[in-house]
Every structure is written in C-alpha cells, then in structure tokens.
Image 1 (cartoon, rainbow, N blue to C red):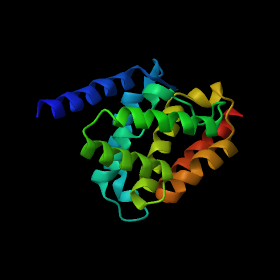
Image 2 (image 1 turned 180 degrees about the vertical axis):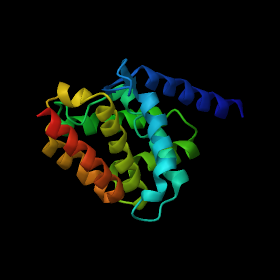
Image 3 (image 1 turned 45 degrees about the vertical axis):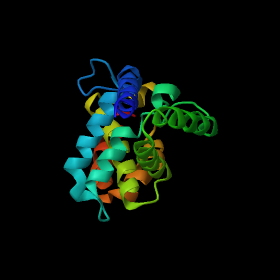
Length: 193
C-alpha cells in the first residue's frame, strides 16, 4: 500500500509544477498571465457549465477528467500558444515524452487510465474529446475579449486566424457556442482593426 501511495503522491507533487507554467492568455482582469493549473481548472468548470451545448451526447465526468490532465505535459513542454511561433511536429514529440514521464509516475492502473484519456483528448475523435477540445479553445477567446484583445494584440491575430484555428474546433463540438462567440469576436475586430 505504501508503494502505491508513494507513486500517487509523486504524481500529485509533480502536477503541482503545472501552477508554475505561465500561459499566453491573461486573467480576465488583465493583472497577469494565467498559469496552466488555473487554465485546467477553469476549463473543467467551463465544461461542467456548458455541457448542455455539446452537439453530441457526452459523459461530462470523462470530459472533466480530460480537461484536468490535458495540459499536464506542459510541465516539461511549456505552453505553446495557438497563435505562437513553434514547430507543431517537434511539439508533439516533446509532449509525448512528457506524457510518458509524468503519467509513468502513477501506479500502472492509473497510469494506463489517465494516459488513455490524454491520448483520447489529443486525437479528438470521440464525442467526449471533441467537446473537451472545443471548450479548451473557448476560454482563451473570452479572456481575450475581456482584456480588450489581450494576446490577440500581442500575437497580431486576425479574425480569420481565430476562425481557422479556434472556430473549426469549437464548431465541431459546440456549434451554438461558436455562433455566440463569433458575433462578439466580429464586433471586437470591427472596432479594433
């Protein structure tokens, strides 16, 4: 039993490092950049509240689990903003190695379960993962709207970038949410470009 607890606490202690990973998106009050731990908690809450807008039946418990662990690889890989300049192929290799290492800290049954959920989220082929990916894209949009463009200004984001990089994912899992956001995004870009 103590060996199992040692492994579980090793994973949980390692997960604490996610709080030190600074993201590209600011808090809604603009006071500072959010960290990946805050982001993971916030989008899990988003999923719980917005589950009724999923375009397919989902298991919200599985979605929340995915969202709580989806960015854990950023402990090793760092945050790579969707509008930032990085090599996606290289990022996949780095994140896979991080997933191996971090989930590898857990007892085998939990390692297999959580790694499978992380892989499912990354593949975004099941209804649960598609909705989870959608919600992962929603929260930064609202933060940028709340901070008058926040990282959009920083990364010189245009509306067509949002539609191709964010809108496609959100529409796939929650089209009603994207329709709502697009009206707000369009209004912001009309006023600021």
